Structures are given as C-alpha cells and as structure tokens.
Length: 432
Image (cartoon, rainbow, N blue to C red; front, top):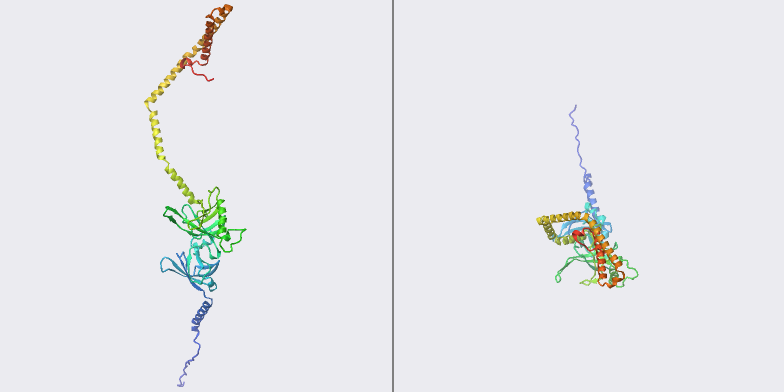
C-alpha cells in the first residue's frame, strides 16, 4: 500500500432560468384564474337588485332567474334591506339578456306560495321558488320591486279596460294578479283588492278592480279602435251581456284548496241589473254570491241564527205546562167520579132496554090492532048511515077524527117497531 489519498467528489452548482416543477401548480392556477377573469370580462352579466317582502326560501347560487322558461341568471346574494321590512336579492343576469333590464321589467316569484292550479309551483315545496323576469319598456335600470306572485298584467299585453266588482262577504283571500275568467277562458286579472268604509252611510264593502284584456274577449265584427281606446266597445259588450244575466262571482279551482279567482258567467234567474258607473267613474259589474264552502257555511249560519231566534224554549215551557194541566185534570177525583157516573147511567139504560125490549112486540101488535079496529068501526058506520050520513052534521067529522086516530096509532106502532129505545131515550128526528 502506498500513502496516496482517494480523490473527493465535488458538487457543482448550475444556475438556470427555469424555476422548477414545484411552481407548475401555482402557475396553472394563476392561468386558469386569468382565463376565467377574461371570460367573465367578455361574457359577464349585469347585477341588479330586486326588493321582495320576504325571502320565501331564496338561496344564493341556488335560486334561478328564468325568462320564458329559460334560465337567464341566478341569485347571488340575499340580505335584509336597510328598512328592516324588506329583503334585497342580488341577481346576476347574463350579458345577453342585459337589454331587457328596463324600468318596465317585472320580477316575481313562482312557487313562493303553492298554487294548486299551477303544477309547476308544486316543486317549490322541495326545491324552493324561482324568480321569473317579464321584460317591459322604459329606460335601463338596475333596481326593481319584486312580487310574490305573477303581476296583474304584463306590459306586453297591450291596452286594458278596468271595471269594479263588489262581492258580498269576505273577499280578502282574493289576491292581486288573480285570474278573471269568462266561461273558462282567461280574459283578465285582478289588479286591486281593498277594504272600503263609507263614513257617510256606514257601509263596509270590498271593491275589487279587474282589468280585462280586449284581445282575449273574442270580439268579432268590430274593427279595433284607431285611438286605442277599447272602453266604448267593451262597455257595449258587457251592457248587453249583463242584461242577459252575466254576473261576477268568486270561485276556487280546485274547489276548497285552490286559489281564489273571479268568474264571469251567466246566472239563471238573476235579478235585473245594469252596468252602472261607480263613484270613481269606473263601470261596476254586478255580482252574485259565490257557491263555495264559505258561502254555504254563511247560509247555514243564517239558518241556524233564524232557528236560534225561534221561541223554542218558551214553546217547550208552554207544552210542558199544558201537559201538566191535562195530567192534573185527568187525575182529578171529580173526573173519575163523573166517568163512573156515566158508566153507571149507560149500564142502567142497557138494563132498561133489556127489560122493555121483550114488551115492545106485544105493544106494537096491540097498537096496530087498535088502529085496525078503529078502521073497521069507521067502515061499519059509513055502511050503516049510507045516504042519511049527510043529515047528521057532527057524525062525519067524528068519523074523520077516528080515522086520523087510527092512522096516528099505526104510525106510533111502526116507529116503536123501528126504534124500541124511544121508550127510554125519547123520539129523535129521523133523516129523510
């Protein structure tokens, strides 16, 4: 072995511009973020604020905004409004639909309240409501007032004609935007339901304002008005129909559980009415009571009230008093004595008749024999006297009296033969 040392390995450091693979992940994330930012800048939408009375289950990034059934945005934030009485919803609307964000555009919730006549609202029980956007005219806007149900009439419907209907009883469940139907066809909506008290007369009423869409009334044979005023044409139509029995009434579809709506239909036997102008100049359509469960309950309550007003208790007390008097009278000793006396009298009469009846036959025969003897005497006298009978003034009269006596005795015998009880009860007038 020699004393030479082994040679050491030396590390050499090389510098390069590549930072290393460790930086690939953050660089990729930065690139994706930049791309999304550029995409959002190019395709970004518009953020608008819609004020609702309640959140109704709206959730950020979950509640969608639709336009004619197509999703055009979503809710980005839901917060309480500064006044503490409303809710502000921030909506992110796609850039392509930014052109529809104008002052006349309306936003409303579908599914905020379950509507049995609208099956699409039923899904809100599980997934929550959706916001529906209906475009309208006006200047560009970013702040809107929302509603919890479909508005009365969308601006795109064109001109409308307003009328007033006053319903008997409660109409508070009828909401703005409720349907107005004519023989099952949708012809308008309810635009206002309010409570009205007349301090002069003390009358309390619930005037309902409805808006009819002339384009849905099916008016034929008349050209649309040049000035766009459909009032004269629609008024003329309703005046004729009201004279024929057209009336307004509240209804529910489905019954009992469905939303309230106004039905215009013909009522058989309706009292005479006209299309009269209300106090504010708007014509008023006559109404009739609804046929739903509330009206039936109200009518039943009226009947029950009338029954309650009857003097049933007083009548019952009088009946009980009369029954007590009859009971006391029937148990009186005098009544019992009188009945016993009558029974004894009847028994005595029966015994008398039984005793007299066997003697009636011989008596009648003797009377008849007496009458026959009188007749024979008269006949013998007439033969004896012959022609000299006329010289005796008193003798013919006596013979006539004897003949009458025989006739009376014979009549008495016949009567006793028919009515032997006459010996006890006396003679009764015989019917002819």
